[in-house]
Image 1 (cartoon, rainbow, N blue to C red):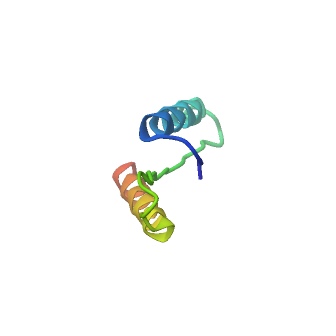
Image 2 (image 1 turned 180 degrees about the horizontal axis):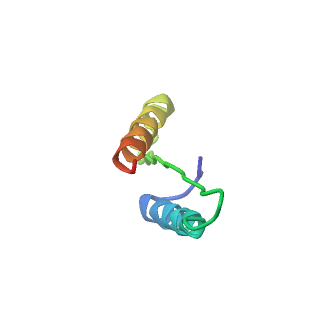
Image 3 (image 1 turned 90 degrees about the vertical axis):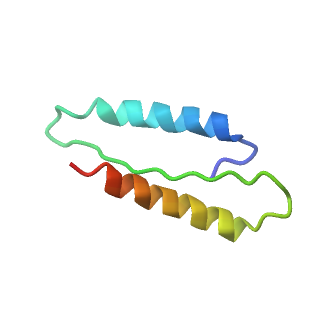
Length: 67
């Protein structure tokens, strides 16, 4: 969870994390990660629904990035 972080800031953080994991590509122990994000944009949005959206995106990323 990234409180007070907008969608673009979140994407920047995800990109930095993904770049770091790519550095392990040739290592004996390769790091792999799937990240999902969703942004709550109004006070009325249910946090549980936001978490479900992020979870869905994480699984979509996980299955699309399999080698």
